Amino acid sequence: MELLSNIECLKNEPLSKHTTYRIGGAVDFMFFPKTNAEVKIIGEFIQKNELPYFVLGNGSNLLAPTEALNGVIINTKKWNIEILEEKHFLKIGAGVLNAKILRYCGEHGLSGLEYLSGVPGTFGGAIYMNAGTRAEWVSEVLESIEIISLKGLERTVEKKDFSFSYRHQSILFADELVSSGFVRLKKVDKDNLKKNLVDMIQKRKRAQPIEMPSCGSVFRNPEGENSWRLIDECGLRGKIIGAAQISPKHSNFIVNLGGATKEDVLSLIQLAKESVKDRFGIDLVEEVKILEMRFLQ
Image (cartoon, rainbow, N blue to C red; front, side, top):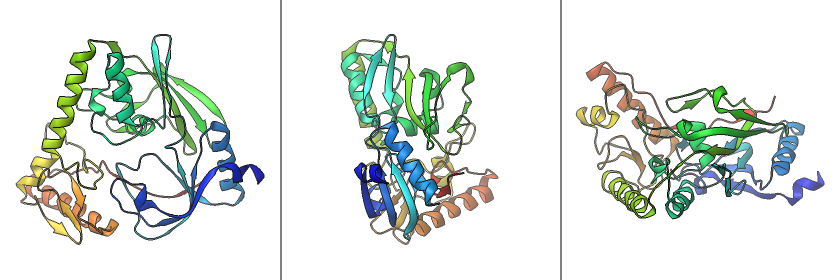
């Protein structure tokens, strides 16, 4: 396929370079599409060669296999990386980093996405995971979402047809990617907003081990509870298995001390789940996603 050769591609590329956990073996092909047309071309390549694939954003909130992977990784970090003002909305591309969004909002005095402060992901990932806090969610400010399938089919989903819940969406079909989202934000005083954003980042730095490789929060918070407290009460703060550790700074973070494997992290996850279940009768649910390749139907 002549057009495929024009798309940026890395062969035998270690996933550890592209995940915030710094864990992951080499994958056969890692493509970096820049346009919707290139997404379709990659989809045709995957389907023609019957290759498994996975769509990767910033690689946060993700645990990848330590061993090598056969197939294709579609890395969206260079695709749809613009922020555009359209009428009363802000159109944010799926590949835009959360940090860039917040810088833009700070400069223009636009409030409504502050909870993305310090979250090392892309806007596409934020939509996919319905990122937010217990009180606020990305889905609340979204007005519509543009979607493309790996077969090149495009569609727009309006707010009235949204299906979001805690850290979950039921909008995308298996072969679809978020292309961009339209959000409605509030106009506020720029100086106050910038100060609030700086304060939020500083608060995260004090409370979370953001200087260490991790996926962010490992578990969802149970209703009326904090996962970190439950894990802490089980005496697991600082627990090490292999080269992975339940962070001494925040017990809902598992950090890579250097050379950790997927199995090290999964062992700590299982230990935390069993310990919390035994002591409190509460089932912890993972927020981190396990990278699983799939085939294009």
